[in-house]
Length: 63
Image (cartoon, rainbow, N blue to C red; front, side, top):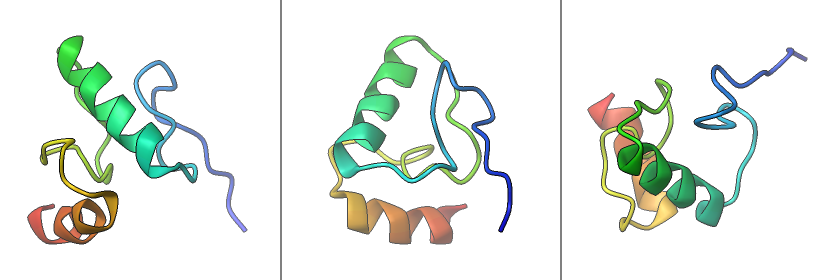
């Protein structure tokens, strides 16, 4: 298919598949370090306390 590689592996493994816990961990960690998550990450502009499924849907709407 395509060669998926993380934009910045030090911040996030997105667009590689990840679990809900991993996505929330990346969001908390990036905010703690004042780093920006990559475009398309479910928690880029959403709080990490939202459930993962809802965050994925809202991330498409919010952008």
